[in-house]
Each structure stands twice: as structure tokens, then as C-alpha cells.
Amino acid sequence: MKRYMVFNVGCIECGVSSDVVGLYETKEEADKVAETCNDKLHWREHGQNSFEVFDLHKPQAEEYTEVLK
Image 1 (cartoon, rainbow, N blue to C red):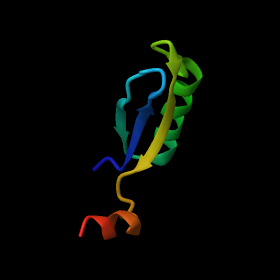
Image 2 (image 1 turned 90 degrees about the vertical axis):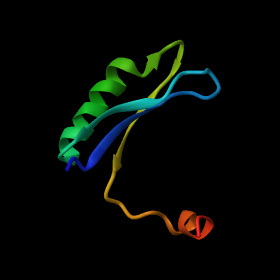
Image 3 (image 1 turned 180 degrees about the vertical axis):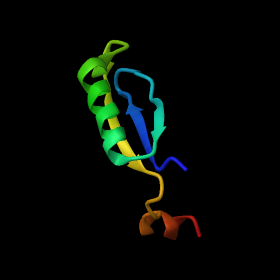
Image 4 (image 1 turned 90 degrees about the horizontal axis):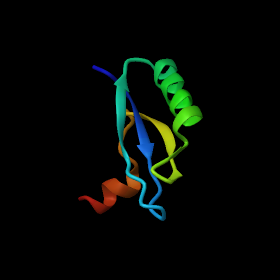
């Protein structure tokens, strides 16, 4: 199972869309993809973009667990 997701966080103020870039086996691979995207696509659709890596195996934060009971 691919553990790491690279996600493009668009800009809510500018109306730039957000979307999944891809899923990757290793953090190193995901970090490289995010870095490349940040270098080449940090400004698209006339606004800011931030490409972030998320660990899909990370447990849910307690603050959300409490709310979702």
C-alpha cells in the first residue's frame, strides 16, 4: 500500500483549486515530488499553491476523534 500522499493545497483567497497529486511508497519519493511541484507550480491558476506530504498511516489527531464520537 502506498503510504504517502502529495497534496496540492490551493489558495482559498485566490480561488486556486486543491487536489491530490499522487500516492507514493516512500517519504523520500513523496518529498521529491512535492519539492519539484513547489519549484515549478507554486504559482498557478493566478494564485499560490503549496504541495504538502501527508502520511496516510498517521493516527487521527485526538481533537478530531473527540468531535467525531
